Length: 162
Image 1 (tube, rainbow, N blue to C red):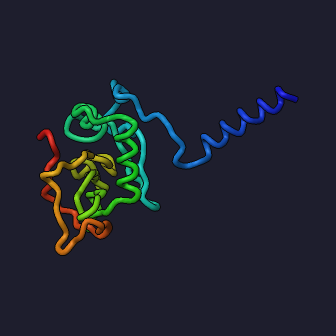
Image 2 (cartoon, rainbow, N blue to C red; image 1 turned 120 degrees about the vertical axis):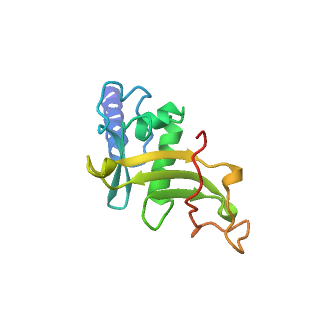
Image 3 (cartoon, helix red, strand yellow; image 1 turned 60 degrees about the vertical axis):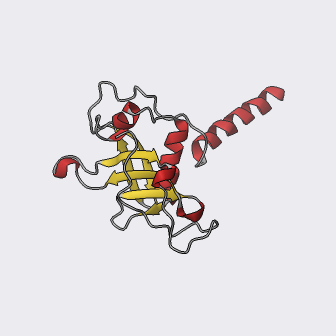
């Protein structure tokens, strides 16, 4: 009896860990793309029915770019997923951002849903993602410390470390 209960608990745990969205998981290791092609998909992120890949890329974009800047870990991966799924999006859907009170931008993800270099594999996917800094924060006109939502995305906020 005790053995069957334990077996049942383990089986339910396995099913739930696979079936439930938002379940904790380990992101791809930093060396995931070693020896793999630029277009290899590391993982995908969703916003409604739109699916955006994170590809291995190279030093100028994608997973290898973010790893090269020391940005990749589970928390960073989760922040990208959250920003794409629920953040504000630019009119052309190339920038997703999360904001704090007073429309202070906190995190930004830049994507290309078109083909790489205009004619190669499509979509290119996540180009880069990064936390924004205090000096890059903007205030929405007439905003208060409690305003969040409908914050404008300023396209000129540069990626740190460049």
